[in-house]
Length: 191
Image (tube, rainbow, N blue to C red):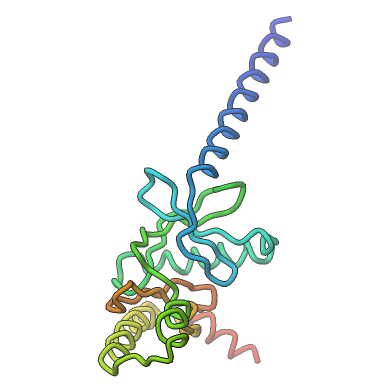
C-alpha cells in the first residue's frame, strides 16, 4: 500500500514539473522577439535575459540540421573570448521546444548582405574604400584567430557576417562549415 502512495506522489510531482516547464516555455514564446534572421537560423531575444538564442527555423528542424547546429556549437565554443570579431557561443539549451545556442547579445546589428541591400544596392550607392578595408581587416583578424586555433573557416559570405549600424564593427557568426585542420589532414590522407 505504501508503494502505491509513493507512486501517486511521484506522478503528481512529475505532472507539476511538466506543467511548470510548459508554462515557462509559453512565457518564453510570448516574451521573445526576433533580432536577426539568417539562412536557416533565427536569433531571438527574451526580456530580462542578457543572451540571444540561436535556433533553427521550424522548416529546418531535422536531425541532420540539429546535428550541424551541435557541431557548430562545439566549434564556436573553441573561440570563446579569443577575438572581438567572432561571435561568442556560451551554452546550449532548449528554447521553444528547439535546440538552441546561447550567444552573446547583439546590439543594433544586421546581416551584412541585408544591410548592403537596404542601404547601398537599392540606392545605387557604393561603400567607401575606407569602410571596405576596415571590415575586411576585422574579418581577416577573426579568421586569423581561427587559423591559430587550427580551424579553417570557409564561409566568409556577406550573409554569414553581422555589422553594426555604422558599418564600423563586424562579427563572424556562423561556424557550421568551419573544420579542424587536423580533421582535414586525416581526411586528405584517406583519399
